[in-house]
Image 1: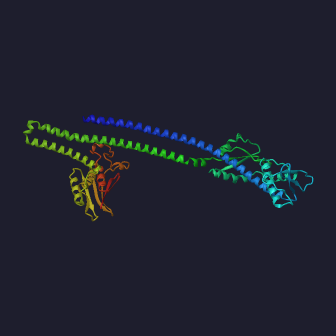
Image 2 (image 1 turned 90 degrees about the vertical axis):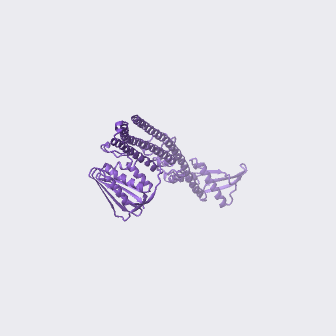
Length: 514
């Protein structure tokens, strides 16, 4: 029956391993799918944002070119107004014409007698005759005519020779104030900033280009400037800058500024899921390790139960023999064997039950003033009865002889550590117990000269059922409960415990609150 139970445990353990591998594979697969989907959507959003960037820079570019041209046109209109107000250069008149039912203004050149061109015009917002060369009216006429020239000539990039003198002057001024990227840059920076675009760019000018953005560019240029706007005409007279574009370097900063929320949320989601999966896998590994430790414990404890039970059963069966029953000496001996083995089973059962009480905090502490030296002395005397070659020393130079603690738990903690030192030590076994003091704790250090514990195993030695690996673990009986008892006891007392080990021995320090 017991053998069948162990086989079932082994089978369940194998099944758990298979499920663990399957779940690990599913977790890794789910993580890979999630990363793939996140990458796909981020790439798609990156593409859309880049397209949006290209659209926005083209709009900003068009607005900037229009604004820069408007600024130049306004400047030229002011210069024209000043020129039209020069009475030595031009003659302005304004008379009411019945056939038009409004005032018609005329412009003539005064300097050049050969310039017989004359221009007549009317103004929507001015319908007043010019008499006695009235300065105020003349200024209004000049302002209106300058605006008319700006809107009709400059806006259409055509100069009409209303008079030879005025036509020549307009050509001269417009050629002096031609398009220049130096003037365009600050205007463009303003429109880009309005769209939160702060990417480095460069102007690209040519005499011949296509305004439909189908021009071919050198691959090296495309690599350096991946975003190039469509071309816009500058209407320059001089060669070199008849068409202009702007070329942007990698717009990653702009795209990142638009995508940071999505990227952060995606990263957070991925990290959260990765953490959850890692936590799940760690829990599975921990459960798997605990299952293996428990299987080892069950195997050990089964052996420990099986031997005394078998011995007790043999003793009881022997008592069924009438010859034995009539032999007082044999009856007493067999009963003593049975009693000892049952006490052994009872003691082991009691240790397991106590561990359960400690873990569930159902053990009621009975703190009292205990005599440290007296209790440790009793423990030393008990373990000195062992048949092994043992030397245990105790020193307390702290001046403190009593401690508030649960007497039974204190005994169990010290006894378990000394028992481990004896159990795993190689003769001659030497155990040193010394006491120290700090403001908050009474410290008991127990040091042995055993083979030590590997540094990789130290974090686990206080776990329930854990046993440090030995060359032949079957030579030493144990259940992996001793140090776990110590841990539970120190936790109950709000104390501290620390283990250090090397090849020359192990030291375990227990700090009891004062």
